[in-house]
Amino acid sequence: MILKIKQKINYDINGIVNFGYNKLILTPQNDDNQTIRSWDISIEGGVKELSSSDHFGNLVDLVSIESNSTKIKYDVVGEIETKNTSGITKTFKQDLPLWCYTSDTKLTKPGNNIISFYKKNPIDYNDLIRSLHVLSNKIKSSIKYKSGKTDYKTNAEEAFRNKVGVCQDHTHIFLSILRLNNLPCRYVSGFFLPKNKNQNLAMHAWAEVFVEDLGWIGFDISNGVSPDDSYVVIAKGFDYNNIAPVRGVINGVFVENQNLELSIEKLDQ
View 1 (tube, one colour):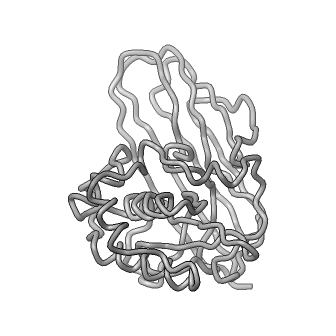
View 2: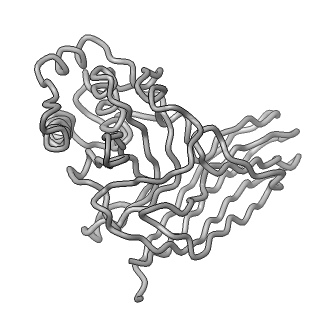
C-alpha cells in the first residue's frame, strides 16, 4: 500500500518571543514494514539547525525559533510504501539493550489498580502471542476510548483507575502490565489509515513486545489488532515522553494556541 500523509502543526503566538528551540520527531525511517518514497518538513518561524538520531534510533530535528515570531508552522508531506508483516518488525536501528525496555517510567509505573489487574490476568508464556492479544482486548474493554478526558501527562495508573482514555493511555497501561511480567516492550507513535472514513484522524499510538525468535510484535490496543500495511511508524521509545512529536522551550511573554491538521490518502499503485 502507498500512503500519502499531510500533517500541519501550527502555533499562533500572541506576545513577545525572544528565542527558543523545538525538538521534532516527525520523520519516519525504512524498516521491514515501510519504505520512505519521499518526506519533507517545511518550517515557518524557525530554522532547522541539525538532524541526528537519538538513543532509540529515531530521527530528530533541532529547530531554533526566530525572535518576534507570531507563527511557528511545521508542514509535513510524504509518501510511504507499506507492507503487511502481521505486526512483526525484525529490524529497527537501536542502541539500547533489551533489558532497558523492562523498566518502569513515570507514565507507565503501576499503582494498586494495575497491580491487582496484573495478578488476576497472568500471562501464559506457553502461548505468549495469544495471551498478549487476550490482555490487549481486556484492556480495550475495560478502558473506554474517549478523547478529552486525559492528556499527555496522564499516567497509566490514573487512566486505569478512571476507566477512560485514548490510544496513548491504552498503550501505557499495556506497557505497565508487560513490564510487571519483565517483558521487553516499547511505545510506538505514527499514523494509521482507518477503515471507517468518518473516524477522526490524529497521530496514533500502539505497543511492541519483543518475542524471542520472532522480533518486535505490534499490538494496537485501541483497535484490538496487530498493525498491518495501513500503519506508518514514526518513532519508538519507553513511553510518550520519549517521542513527543514536538517538544521544546521558548523564552518570552506570550500566549500560544496550537492547531493540528492531518490527512492520510491511499494512492493507486
